Image (cartoon, rainbow, N blue to C red):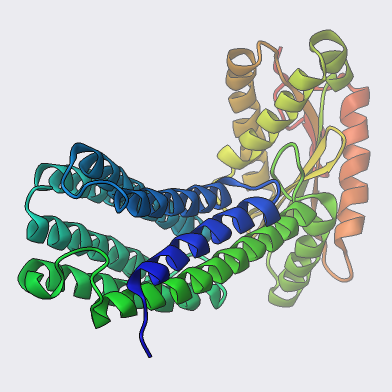
Length: 392
C-alpha cells in the first residue's frame, strides 16, 4: 500500500490543530499546569502549520528560512510548556530552564545553519529528541504524591516520538541522499508521520486524564481545607483529632488543645473592610503554623475561632506555643496589616479514661469565654488562670 507522505504530514497538522481546539474547548476554567499544557499543544500545532506553509514557498528562499525557523521555535517551545505542565501535575516545581535553553539553542542553530540541509535536519531532530527524552526521564522519576496511569500513557507516546524523531535526524544528517527533503517518500518519514498522529492522540488523552486527576485532587483539598486561610476546616480537623485522641489513650501519651478567638475581629472588619479581615484571618493562621515547630494540627474552627491540637506534648509546651504566637502576631500584624492582632484562648488537656475531643473543646471554650470576660488578650488553662502575658 502506497502512503503519500505529504498527505500524512497534513494529517499530522490537522490532528494537532484538533487536539489544541479540544483542550481549549473542554478544559474550561483551568489552573496553571492545564494552561501550560494548552499553550504547549497550541504552539506545537502552530509550528506544524508554519512548517507546512514553508513547503509552499521557494526552497531555500528567505520566506522558507523564516517560516521553517519559526516552526522549529514553536514546536520546541511547545514541548517546553508541556514539560512544565507534566512537572506540575506530578507535584514537582517545574524544571523549565533546560527545556527553554534547548528550545533557544535549537532555534538559533537551525537558523544559522539553515543553508546546510543535512546539518539543520540533524540538528533540529536531534535536539528535539533530547528534549523529548528529558521529559520522559522527568515523568519516570519518583513522584511526591500518587500519580495515575496517565503518566505511563505519556511516557509511551513520548518514547515513540523520540525514536521516530531521532531516526529522521540520523537519516537527514548522514544519509541525505535518501532523505533529500521534508516530504521525501521514505519509510522513516512515513513511520514518523503515522507515529506522530497516534502519539498526539495518546498525548491528548494523557493530558485530559492528568487534568481530571488534578481537578479531583483540588476538590478533595477544598473539601478538607478552609478557603481563606488554607488550614484544615472543622470537619476534617475533627476527623484527624479523634484519631490522635484514640492513639493518645492507647499509648498513654499527652494531648493538648488550644482554642483561640481573634479579639475585636468585628471592629477590624468594620474599620478596615472585609478584605483586611480576611487577610487578618490568613495571617493568624500563618502565624499558628509558623511558630508551631512540630506535632501540630491546626484548623479554622469557625468564624474568627481557630484550634490547634498538639500531640506528644503537655501543658508547658502549649504555653510556650501560646507565647511564641503572641510575639509573632505582635510583630507581624502592624507590619503586614497595619493592625494589631491579639486573641483570647483556652487550653485543655486530654484526661484519663473516656475523655474525648468534644469534651476537650467544651472545656477550652469555657476557659476562652472566661478569658474574654477578664479583658481579652490572654490565655487561660485548667491549672492557672492567666498563662499568657497581656500584650498592650
